[in-house]
Length: 225
Ligand SMILES: [Zn+2]
Image (cartoon, rainbow, N blue to C red):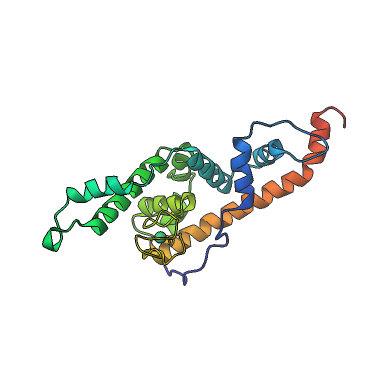
């Protein structure tokens, strides 16, 4: 197979409808108003589409956002980690090494959280998820790479600075101040991510189309049609 030149995924930013769905899914006001569009409309509009893979990705992001994530270590905690590590020259603490160890630990914790999400299981299903497509591209370690890309979809924060864009001294070395990280696995990761983006775009336009039909549906639902 040939791998196309890396392309930016069509949806570089998190889709706005997904954002609305995130807030709608935790909304305390799910009243349906015939005159105006409320949080409930987004949930209903998303729900009446065929549950495609793009919709599952949106749900995965919602599930991810709702989970408690590990907090970055405080300077004091980081110092304690460094004290357990081999010293640098002249007995100095290896603070950079401690930071790297922390980053690795955070990545592992995030991966554990992702694997525990209900939609993760569906999206990586050998028959119905993204996996058959990834395998068909001839990508080795398909499941692992798909998992890494799905984690990127949930969390694009730079592992070096946690998205705050600042490092110990000045601008974060890892992300050069962007606060985000690249899609993992280079061209193969880009290919997988582009495929996911296409599904999410389709789900989003489906939700938008459904929102347009919403007024009519609500009228029927209210028995006033
Ligand atoms: Zn950074």
